[in-house]
Length: 456
Image 1: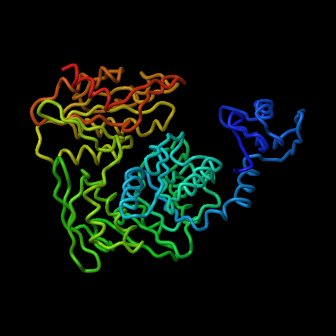
Image 2 (image 1 turned 60 degrees about the vertical axis):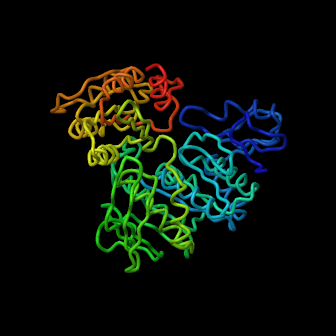
């Protein structure tokens, strides 16, 4: 058991409680609760009158990081850890790789946006990359269940906030960089620099996999790590020659070391070609053969809410997490290439987040879709009307309407589906909640679609 705890409710007898001042909660307010639960020492940033010893430090978060790294990081030296970073594709790539490795006989855990997975166990996580204490506890849990490998998503926030201190990656991958999280990073340059920090955590003999087609990939080239590049462009180590897309699968022809290969996947869309090949490159670097990877390819699937298809009438509804301009453009363009009638898109933008991308996403959706229904997507504490005003500002199109209630918007879109129509329900994917104000209300796009089907 790690001797430190930052959540007073989770304190066990004999642990040291570290009082951390967060964005909304101050751990110093919960010291009495921590002692009641058995804390025998307190680490704080100010003098506290209590019944157990108190050590005052300048920065409790920094203290915790340093102590965890010093006392526990060495325990992970024999655990193979693979980190995936990028704006889009982290979750699908990491989750696919987690499945691949397990099916290839390598007992593996997954840590990321959709939770913490190993064997048949799953629990939700509050962040794509948890805080450092939670992360260390998850790594210990994975090892206790005999996992030899962990695949984890690495967010830009976690790199900036040093949540992965003490972790060393055997393999790392960069999927892409597009506009997102500028409410936190302020500029694309800052956002890029945060992503580049993953190189500081890659072992000297580690392998770096890069999306050769991304405009920012060259920024990751100036280092001594072994690199594998994937993509459609010339110069990629694994170069796509041809792709055949259908509503049920994708066939990929690619060249590696002057040899031609073909695989058929359960994945849909061009961006999933990148996700698949990133996994393939990592697996090849781990000495798995093409034949072994190909066999397993047919039995791995994308996570819930990533290009998830539900058949409706004589058309389809697709639920996807796309919530950035780049992801929205890619998914609508992908389905536009298929044989279809109309594309109807349901989309919104989160409140209390980067407002700059809102009009970009609004215009993109209208330009590429036959019809768009703008709706709420986690408005949080921001006025939904203001969010919509931002989305449709100077939009230049009339093929849209606004329906604030997300369930009503989805039902409206479903009622519009005719033969060979495609309804894209974007933005929330795997999420099973709406954040309205500060309250989390249960809401699941897939459940909503299935309930409409039951009623109709």
